[in-house]
Amino acid sequence: MYFDSHLHSEGLGFSELKKLAENHIKDICSLAFFPVKPRYPQTMMDVFRKLVEFEPVRCKAAGVRMFPAVGIHPRCIPPDYKIVLKYLEEGEWIAFGEIGLELVTDEEIEVLRSQLELAKKLDIPCIIHTPRGEKVRATMKTIEILNTLEFPPQLAVIDHVNFETIDMVFETEYWIGLTVQPEKLSPDDAARIVAEYGSERFMLNSDAGYRDVEIATVAAAAEKIAENVGKDEAIRVAGKNAKKFLRL
Amino acid sequence: MYFDSHLHSEGLGFSELKKLAENHIKDICSLAFFPVKPRYPQTMMDVFRKLVEFEPVRCKAAGVRMFPAVGIHPRCIPPDYKIVLKYLEEGEWIAFGEIGLELVTDEEIEVLRSQLELAKKLDIPCIIHTPRGEKVRATMKTIEILNTLEFPPQLAVIDHVNFETIDMVFETEYWIGLTVQPEKLSPDDAARIVAEYGSERFMLNSDAGYRDVEIATVAAAAEKIAENVGKDEAIRVAGKNAKKFLRL
Image (tube, rainbow over all chains, first blue to last red; front, side, top):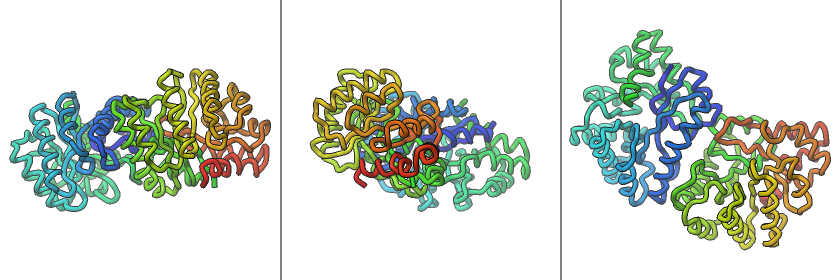
């Protein structure tokens, strides 16, 4: 029983959700994202409602237990985003995500910082995106913001970490998300990382959704880790750690 | 080369879109729908933007040419829906859909009528849903509204028509949509209908999206029609008619 700790179920079809279940990925965390920059803050509120009210039912019908994460992705910052922050403050949530920096603009920094402040106050785990471009700079800035806020280490996972950023994230106490996809890390890469850095701080994900992606990469990576490193390590990074992080 | 004239690409994953293309369904019309009742009219405007700006690009990457249809589905009527109508009036659109009646409430009737009036004024083809429950009553009411508006016959397809409603729709001059899915019509049913009623007024669709559905039903039905009725008839109901209706 594996846990995919970061994907976008809204971009997956029913047969793809079933494929997760068939590959023993029975638990997933599905993160809020809207593929065009919204013109209205209200949209994000209804998008969160869709993710929390409709998507778990659809996922369950496909054999997958889905835990939704809500929040403003740096590519989805609407005008008057404070209306969305107020909505986030008033709700009850399992996690905030996908939040983070993309181009490291002042607005992105402000939106990330506001959401982290809220998460610290409300005691909510945060799944923090790092981008493909600007990866080093965005990761450094993210760590700086977290440190400045004295953000509780158990409440943050820094995600899409790669060989360029792993050392600077490993030096912190935050969780580390490894995204297994052809253009990101391979199952072998994930196994190498876990062999070198241990399994305590890592959680695996596919970031699947919308695009042409491989679906069951958490299972593939877990098998590789079990083979090359150890079964306990595989169980930890492909399940236990995510459950601990999300308090399930 | 087939045309699926009514589906919801937003509920399909990339591998499912590719499956359409692999089955020679290279053209699709993707209809607006939001799976929870929106709390804000603004949401529908951003949902239309996603469908028009993002979805065609995603579909194209999977090998499918997508034509978006926008409109307020009876299960997605937001408060202050007149704001959405104004947005629809000001834009340029290929088609309106999915519009129609679900429970045949006064509000649904008003929203359908308003959208049809707009479509008549702006000369926009409309894809009109009929529900699973209340099918006969909703279909009769829909026809009554269309007739009262003297709605141009070439601009409306009445969709999800089944054996219960086919005669009353066939008596009108509107296009007729046949939805081929296990719980609706089978490829054999579609072939029987085309054999009996001719191929002039029909267009096939899958209504695929979100749920556990079969993807390439338009191709399956077209093959059955080619076999049992004739190749020209298959080409018409699985392609030509939809293109004519949407003026492509």
